[in-house]
Image 1 (cartoon, one colour):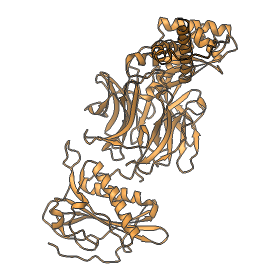
Image 2 (cartoon, one colour):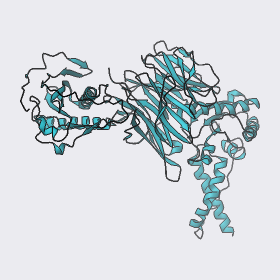
Image 3 (cartoon, chains in turn orange, brown):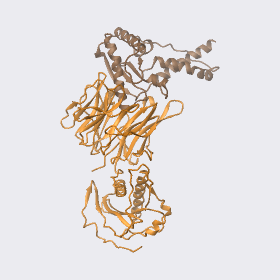
Image 4 (tube, chains in turn cyan, blue):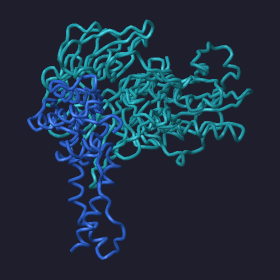
Length: 455
Length: 181
């Protein structure tokens, strides 16, 4: 069972490479080892999933720097997989005789004894010009088969992205679903007294690392959202005491007010093709939904009703818009087509419904619900059927979908102390309603928005 | 007894000052409340201590923001999710209109606010509705719309902290702020 198979050394050059930004991906040759056992797979659509025990070894290296990079990369991969709730990383202290090379089939009995179902091995090689090569293999320990083998080449400062991309590859291979680890969160960092809250635009990787502030807190900012290519953020700012929708370019740091509207503009989101921003404008006591074409800079009104029409969000195919309106007397969720016609109410449960967000898969709408003095985060079918509540609290609000539609982030306010204080934090929860986790941020945090994956 | 009265007055003045720094424009109602609640505490601390400063009287300039806040009242309140004006709110806005007629060169911004029991974006729309509701009545009372700006803060700038109806009521408000006042 521990037959060794040697891999050809020069495997990289003969394989087709795929560009992922600065990252070059090449599949590693499979180390084949036949087995009659069924393939390792986690079905994440079930309500309860027993986490898959996985051994993520520290990626090996020759030099001290390579070894340290390998440990860091493995740490990020391990943390991602564990946070998904679908994997249980086996303590590295328990490992027996970790392989010192990627070029042999692992000693599977050493991993079976730990009950590891899957094994991740990798190697870091620093090459010239600050470039780094990261190889990894995912093994099915019981079937004794390689499930994936890949090589990535990138600049060294990209090591976190490489780690997320490797974790996404593992997630996809084991669950059959796209991963979501190579993604970012834009959100509002909060400090100071609740009466004069200081709010700043901030951005971080989905695991809370790589954190940056984008604005300095001198103006109140709210409700940021990513553009489809992740390079821009649309949000609302009270800059100069004139509340308007802005676009922030992440590369240049430039902020630009969007359009010349006679009233307050707010609640902006990009269309799926990135060419349009949909938002609300309030004037003379009436809030309507508008779209602004970013190429022609022409604005167009979509709703005509004396109600508050806000929180618009496009379906992934761009053909429909889900939005929030109190035209029935209380806040409810409606769907209309992209021209603003054929308005149809989809929420009919007890309570008020708000902040609808269309799932990237297209089949579900996430929402905030207010009922019986409590707030809930839930999902409902596009046809208005099958409402499920996932999280609740004194106040939970602002759901946002992971790029693969399996996880929802939101924020929660928790009353604290006797002086009316409260604590505001971001959480994530699986679509199954399980695995709720706090996303640790340097300050208090609200209004999270999840980025797409880089295509 | 005279010393004690003096301390009361000083404590009151101190609190008025403190209140002013807490709230953007001060609040007639807030001043009343805080004073009543906190005098007891301060008395315990200062009773028997030496009082050397003489109280300085407020001098309120007629037509100023302070004049408006103290002698008229700068805010009206709304029911949950509503923007229609109660009879109390109408009475307050009529007083505001009378004052604005007397000081015809003064411009105002009406801020619309909501309590924390709603969602952020909807509350921005609701705050705008409330500010306009107040504006519409002032205009109906003969104040030029050119003198009145509106801005919605949604639930972003509460006047009262606390997670009960007593605080939420104070936050569902439209506040008339004198420009430059």
